Amino acid sequence: MPEPEPTLRERAAEVLARPSTVTRVAAATPLVLLALGLVMVLSASSVTAYAESGSSYSELRKQLVFAGLGLAGALVLALLPVVWIRRLALPALAVTIVLQALVFSPLGIDYKGNRNWILLGSQTLQPSELLKLGLVLGGAHLLAHKIKRLGEALHLIVPFIVPVALVALGLVLGGRDLGSGLVITAIVIGMLWVAGASLWWFVAALGAAGVMATVLALTSANRMGRIAVWLNGCAGPQEEACYQKVHGEYALADGGWWGVGLGASREKWFYLPEPHNDFIYAVIGEELGMVGATFVLLAFLVIGWVGYRVIAGTRDPFVRIATAGIMAWLLGQALINIGSVIGLLPIIGVPLPFVSSGGSALVAALGAAGVLLAFAREQSRPPRRGRGGRARAGSTGGRSARRAPAPRARPSRVGE
Image 1: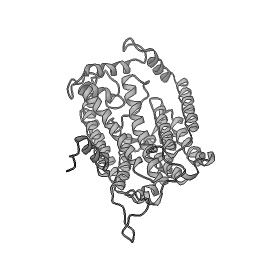
Image 2 (image 1 turned 45 degrees about the horizontal axis):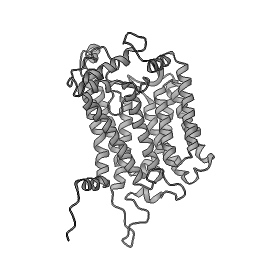
Image 3 (image 1 turned 90 degrees about the vertical axis):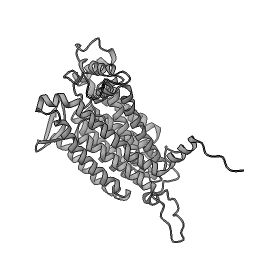
Image 4 (image 1 turned 180 degrees about the horizontal axis):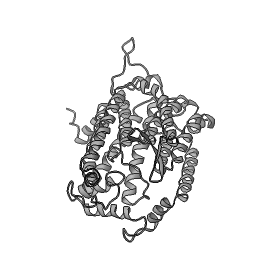
């Protein structure tokens, strides 16, 4: 009897299981979010940009420049072999830590109570965004190098947690940037989880993060006001610390299911602060409605799926750990941003990856996307053949996977 034709579900599952599909999705999803972000930056910033510079396109022009730089960097990283990315990991970590330390030099500038920028000529740079990428790559290299001994407390702590992660976190928090500090904490926890660290370390890390957030909140009247608003709610925008939160909710409510139309936002007319930056998701909800807001959420879920497939499809500990760090970074930051806008979290102030206006954040996020694409491409390549015509043992379709097989004693948590 002839075999039955595969069902549509079986065909879809087979297509999604192909490494080439993961590679294509890894390339397409950030580009879709970037395109949406450029359109929404133009729409959300047009009013304030015209008032400040006489041109509704001034903010878009700046964002296009950084998009070009970020895409160029992402392309270079995506075409590099994984072994070269790993060779560049420690230099990237060192350079980004030095850049972050420069915020305390005469080059550093204060903005809205945070000292997390440096001035290079006429251009500002936010080193904490680049530090996230450096920490992901450098931390993955350090953890992968000690993967067989991470069960020992000393090797787990030194050198990744102490001094690397603590120095990076201390420099960011020294500039009073709580949002970036939370994202860096999420990166560290995600990398340790996939590396196979004991559950007790996560309890300790979460406890330390809670203490850190509490101290920073108690020492800032502005943050305490935001937390009070989050806990107690607002009767209207006229209440103290309620203005941005309430107008963000107005924007989402006005959007309904289908939105008021692209470019037709009313809240961007000097009502909603930071409409093209931290609160761009509110403008998306207002102009594109629930459909547009849900599309953004699904796009980030797709990025999470790509990361899971990369982790599950490789035996290279460096690739696994770095991918976990990228997932924790992009998804964690998106969660904080969207949660702040819709009221699930206090307003913390981090950009929406690929979408919000901001050069440093966009270049760093596109760099992370380029690294993720390089990992996916490595898996989609056919395995190299040995002298006898057989695939080398332990091959998963990438050179790095054969060079650094995962130890049997400490399997990855993903794909167990």
